[in-house]
Length: 117
Image (tube, rainbow, N blue to C red):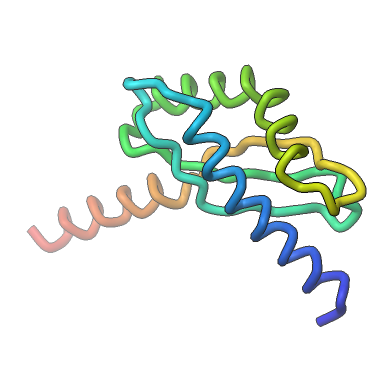
């Protein structure tokens, strides 16, 4: 593994850690509750950062609401991230994506339960 990839993984890990605190301190909405960040992918040139998230009450309406809230607060979140990280050349643009793996896992569990019954 090259040094660039290791360094990028460290940056992504740091960004993930910081964003967990920033997002959950900044966004308070009783309907969607806690936003869980499941993964952060940082582009090699540091221009984009994909942030994957889930919510406990994962109805389609709440997923759309949480995405909307994150998008509306994106600029503020990015500014707070920039104030926390001083050693990066640039702060990446944030791209929020709902992590479908939890929903997919629930569907698989339900199918398996139906097969067993």
